[in-house]
Length: 526
Image (cartoon, rainbow, N blue to C red; front, side, top):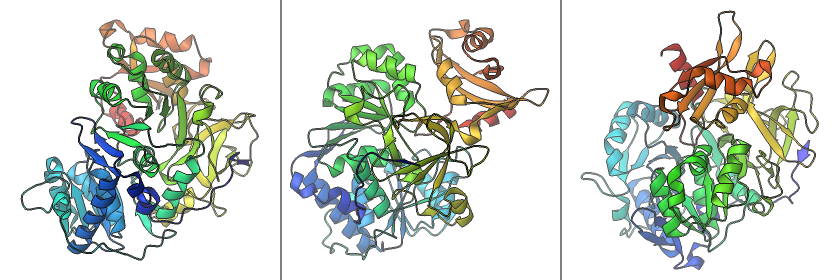
């Protein structure tokens, strides 16, 4: 068993709005949230006051403890106010992908038992159609304004009393995000107030934030990574969050320059853009102090190229999953230079880990041996909503959550994640990690992006099949044979890519994870 080298932290038994905004009034006129496109700013005093007024407005409309409220919005400076207002009114918040179709949205509404929706006017038709399909929704509110719908802005003027629901942080669900569905049907992940608040305290010794830090929020708040690293963590400590609704490279670079961003929490596709895109050199990014990447594997060579180009310390990584609130590992900000290349970090405070054999899950492995990663700690989810069998399959009787990820720990306690158990390709009995091949493909100057899945050849063997996006400057010059040779020269024979499909884009979730099921569909129905 591996344990964190950090001292344990006591559980934070507070509602999430108190855990994050409990000191907001003390930060007063410090900027809390800035719209990265038009500069609109909310101070800490305003966020504190506004979320309390909106909570009163929601309660007056009928929102009660035990209700589920769906928050359906891109990143805006109103998103945190809506989130904390809903939890202060007693609701659990289920966060919804702003690009979800009405049908996808309706499934989440039905599964979660949502009674209320908060959306934005551009997404109102999608939300309205989803509510009709799902049934059971009492009312839809908008953050901005739309005829026929109550607005959160209007609620700021309410004279209704601030709600005082009797919340139990240990048992009550604060947020109900849905797992990405990259390997199966999306499931509601029940995260209590204590679990997500304690995870913030667990992360702090390794990745502290403070007043004066300026964090750029381009990854979505609706995803647990964005919710934690870009919203809850910085607002808890008085930092400033500059908000962008979506990733556009030039807008992103301009925001770093104009707002003097000090820290970036991103996913590998953004690291790839920072390392390779020519436009990056046209912007002043000198305010940056560090970059942390998470949500998907990051190749060590790509990370090195990005850091060298930006003149930064090595790019750090973090590791976790929605079911873990989400963090378990991070490269400490004060040890970026000391961390070995490719590591996802050290165990955060109060967290235990085991690495178990893929062939015999009862067998624990030592440092240097690869197996499935198991995690135990206060951040382990309460369970999957309405799916006790799936919960039992994920969390064993001793409280160990089986991540489905394959990795190993070195002698100094640094974790390296190799791949997903279910995504490992078994070629004639040998295990091949798609992430390793993807990282290798990206070293080719003619390849802009790549993904690898297992497919079966005529003899029934599972073989690596690469989906490759040509770099714009490579155009049609990059051939299948050139890609196959690039890999074959650098790996053992059993790891060679056997098939190539050129595609325009690699499908990814908002978190940056490759949607391999869509590639499988493409393979079967080209």
